Amino acid sequence: MTNIIFIILLFVIAVSVVCSLNFSSVVRTNLIVLPIVIFSIIFLFIANTKNFSMERLYPVLGNGFNSTFIAGFWNLFAFGGLSLLYFIPPNLKDYKQFKKITLISMILSSVYLLLSISITLLMFDSFIEIDELMPLYSAVRYLEFGTFFQRLDSVFLLIWIISFSCYLTIISNLCINIFRKLTNVKNTKIIVYPFALLLFAISLIPTNIATSNFFGLTIYKYMFFILVLLISISILIIANIKNKIASR
Image 1 (cartoon, rainbow, N blue to C red):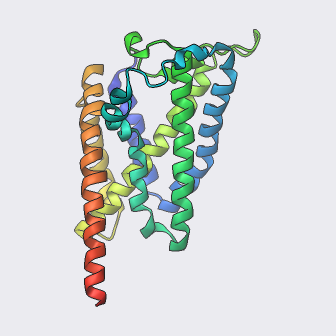
Image 2: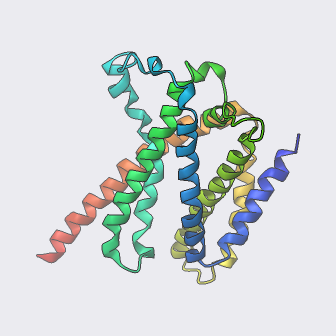
Image 3: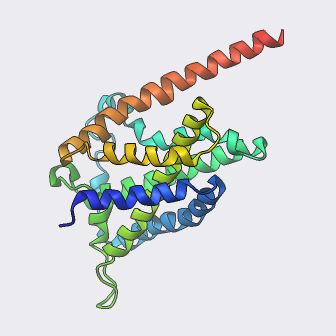
């Protein structure tokens, strides 16, 4: 029943305060939160095994090879978070660690996605028809450990809110740093508050679930393929060609 403006303000104020701090402080905070988030998903998967039905895995190829591997190619946007790897090198003390960081990030992201999808697939027949926003949140409601440990959804929701705040903080920090380099502004704090107002204004654009789904499942999907795959790979190819020409 709380007005959405107050909820968004809480996130925006938190992001503004954190972005005013050193970027290394943000990274260390995420390092603390990440194991908790990973553990919560693993725990959710193990605790719900009694509610799994292996029959829901069949047919293995779903509606066919074309539907799964050709039309389903667009679902690769789920790995959009890996695009953050492009922005990590300038913030590393030792560039040689980048390969190790990339490998660990991809493994953790794959395991996280695999567990999340497995929980949804093995517990629900067709989640699209149920029209729920968060499948994992619904899966938490099935957890019960006697009469003492009940309604664990509140605990999980708190963990996911914290993880979302951390993700939003990392994204905001990267955006602010990119803008600072483009404009050659030395004081980051000058950019933080105008950026927070912009973030708040954009957050108010979706007025209903349908609009949110449109931005998340349509616009974000095409932005991932255009920015992350097409433009980024093109820049890497051009940079390598330029480097080879310059080295001659």
